[in-house]
Length: 165
Image (tube, rainbow, N blue to C red; front, side):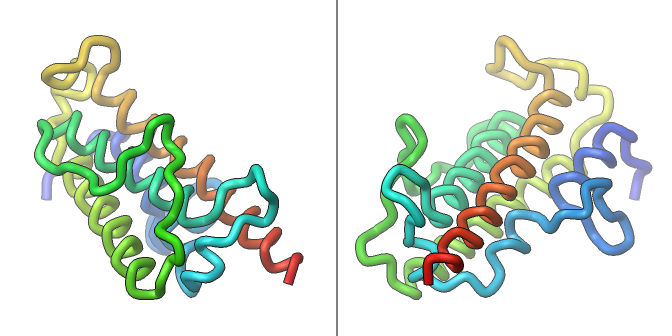
């Protein structure tokens, strides 16, 4: 395997840390935070104007899909529409639907990871085709920061829901 650009390595460490290559922040990924979450917990809002875990997880998956499409060319449509970006979970959110949505989140994450790992280092400081304002490296680091931010939200929502039980 070719040596990765150091900027790609740091982004990957942030949005897909491993034991061999841990992130500096020490936090689990959003996917790690979703392990063991039931459909009931995923669809539950701790407060009326708060988001639920499902909304945050699908928001992350939506943007991972969007960045992957920007870096590789639009290839995959996302099954949920987010305008502004918070959609409501299917009511009731069944275990079957939640498992399917978790699989969708994992699939989008792994697809993005593969695209980032294989991204041409000479193209990092260029705009992806069809993009006018951002460089590829900005998308790559931006999605890493985005996932960290929303991973913290997932953790807080889980704690708030557990405290209300």
